[in-house]
Length: 249
Image 1 (cartoon, rainbow, N blue to C red):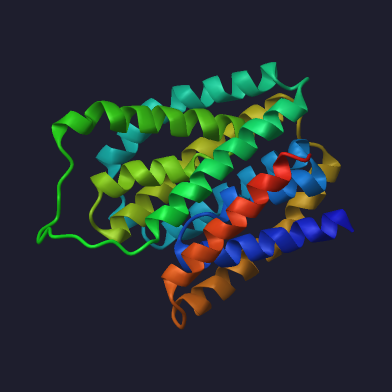
Image 2: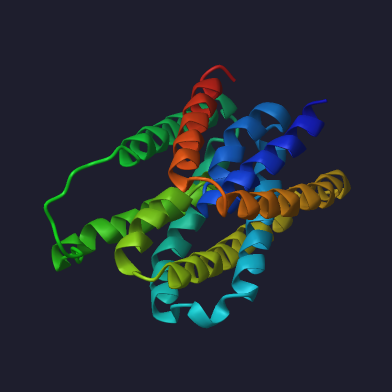
């Protein structure tokens, strides 16, 4: 029963992914670790993130910003490896890992809910990021890589970075998809090398792929007919609930 619910979580999370353009993995992860454990949820959701990146980039590779991609990988890559190492050190303390993930998701949910609130602005033009923000942007990338190495949930911080660097949504979408292909690919190779993958996990992975594709398709259809802001609010409320459940794992 729990495994079936895991597939339903993948379906629902990727409906949100299809509507908002992100949040699939970060939304699925808390519920998934509750249902099937971190040893199953992390590798499966990582591989699904890689596949979704390939799916998006295949149709938008011409919009890829290669310069920004290389910069992101240069900072996130080493931090990702550090995250994998830290997670291995804490492997004997799963409760601590769940608490860390819960705090992380809780902060992302609160920040996300606040960001959806309407605000008044007197500015008439776009505000470009200043050179003084370079250190903050670098820290965002490093933190994103660290979190992604531990929980495959570095997306929100990477989005915060890329949103200030790339103006065109097509360029943003293609570039972030390429990032997940490279980083999730590295994680996949590490997981295989560490012996995390076996026949049973591969079976779970193969069964989950149709739920991923179905969710993204439904989400893309709903996106054309419904308010994205409403679904963003729903997404962050679900994240809030998911975060709270992790404290009782």
